[in-house]
Length: 247
Image 1: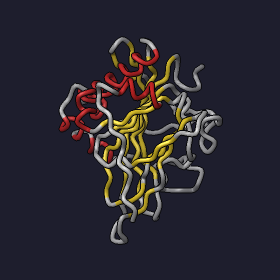
Image 2 (image 1 turned 90 degrees about the horizontal axis):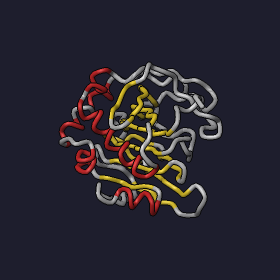
Image 3 (image 1 turned 120 degrees about the vertical axis):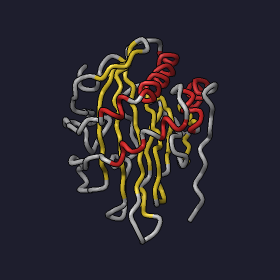
Image 4 (image 1 turned 45 degrees about the vertical axis):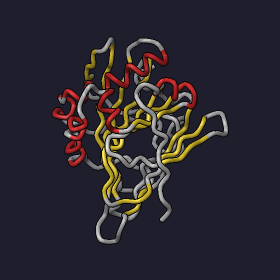
């Protein structure tokens, strides 16, 4: 098997410069913990929340490989508040497979949201957003995903290469277990440049400007025939003005 391409790592001091220059940045786990004003072990303490994700009942490709939870927040002047539970919505312009319908998932568990590192993580990334676009309230959607290989192949992005219809996206690898594949690919939306790499370190992060970049993750397969595997991620989207569908 071909060795995976390693990500072009940045650090917290260069994130904004890298996003301005190339549309995205990748941070190792230790730097992500710094952004969240936490220790690496504080992030890892969130990981058990991925062991209790309900199956995604909306997959239009007929697959059974994705489980998830979803909750929404508003980040304003450094204060994070969770809003009443609501459906996830995208237009067909941004999600040709699942756009145009309201998808109501189970909310993220209260214990996960109550962890101090949760607010620190969303708040730290929100500071990047304000530094790049100007201070304002950010409408944040948080998605916990588990993609498994119980049926042979799991697809992290069944809609293919896409934009999310927001301002910024953070994709955080929570963990990989007994899989191969899952390569991240990020491309300019209006240009020829692109890059491919595989997030391997738990709690490493890719942060991108969704107005400029298209992204996808390739399918995963079990690393051996002995047992299925899975890939866990936390995807955070930051949008100015309103949640998608409200404006």
